[in-house]
Length: 150
Image (cartoon, rainbow, N blue to C red; front, side):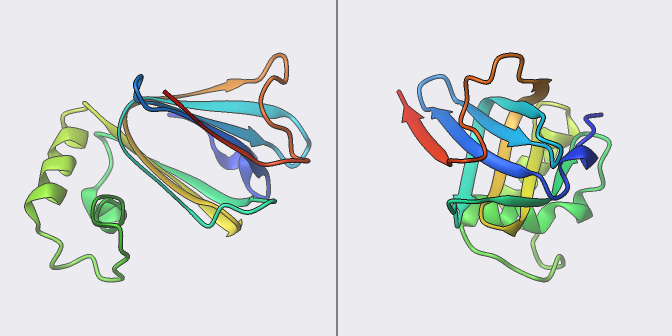
């Protein structure tokens, strides 16, 4: 399992979304300044809300086949239907159940970047990887960049 604890109070510094490749790349920075790249491949759903000049991370949550769907059912609802719900009961909808089954089979994972301030990001993808950025080529904390590429 990926360790996202190092990003509490860190920053989301940029996002690149490759539409034809169905890939999303998030540039993250630890509070100590170390840069990381989170790459989501074969993305089926992607949502970002309230991107700001500065985006401070509260937590990054990750759900996979070993996770209890009760914990992420409302997140899937927000991602698929574009609106938020507080209750987790009553979300027995076909598209939600289909996405849960895909996650249970291990064919997808769900990631949420929850902000203290700024961007909320939800991603449903086949795979997510996290790597230290060796040569900072992505956006840095001084700026926020969103790039949509075909």
